[in-house]
Length: 426
Image (cartoon, rainbow, N blue to C red; front, side, top):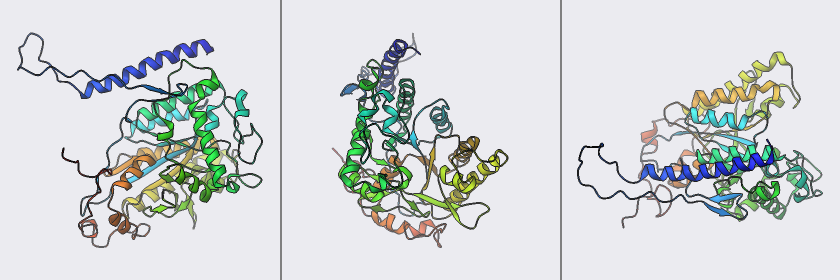
């Protein structure tokens, strides 16, 4: 598509964005009149819907558009109430390319009452010609182990990010250059270097219009400084110093670790929402809930493995995740945390496996397929004593005398103003 066509299309999308927000306001306000020609009861004049709130930020790459749609208010568990089964599907380095996997899984989410977390790599918002703007810690300017993007790729990614957020999904970060291992990998970065990397990731999201020249395109409908509350580090390295930086920057959770299927607690002031170990069908050991790790333990390489085994490998990952789900669902109800990449490793068999897991679990009773933000909101709303009790349950362990007996104590009241607290009477 020519640049002028993209700009024109962007202007149309911007108008559509404002119209859609105004439409949402109209749905929730005012009153319905009587049928035409039939006098109805006297009613007060309907209150006009408020004008849509679209306040551009900086160069207009992002904007404040009000509260995020489709974000439910969390509620405290009642005494004796069985916890819901949370499942979090998340994507490292989220971006839209020719495979169209971002847009595909948005549709999978909507079809199965799910929301997800998309960890955006900041360099996916930076065109190759502006690569030198990225100054990675311990590396020369313009260096990135995952490359950069082109203008069409940025436009496509922006579209998916915009729609995903409006549908209630979360936009996190996977930082920028994805440096792993020694010689300047993220595991060697200091707290200050992590803060610099995070600042740059935010900056590329907040200036994609300037860096691409697409000044008339529609903005991302969120303030990224406020939207960004959590992350997963590249290769799960550098967690300790990252968490030190994240805590100072106001993050609320981290998902860079490895844990068993137990209820999460806080670590360095952040919710530790680590991925987990689940059964690995056909093996005596357990496997991390991430497509990359299944792949490495199956074909042993990121290159394409034996095509004859691809279907089996996908079934193996799917069945392992489902076994982990069942162990929690019928056991301690600990949230199941799953990580993925928009990749077609081994013929796309892992994408098929993830989709089948979404379809299988997200429509079950008491299951909530949510983003990390929604899970953190729910955890913040709970009585700390109840969460501490939930953490006493081992992997797959359900309360011996049932949930009513296990959680029947009188919970402490929620402090005023926190999610889940009773409304304050005016």
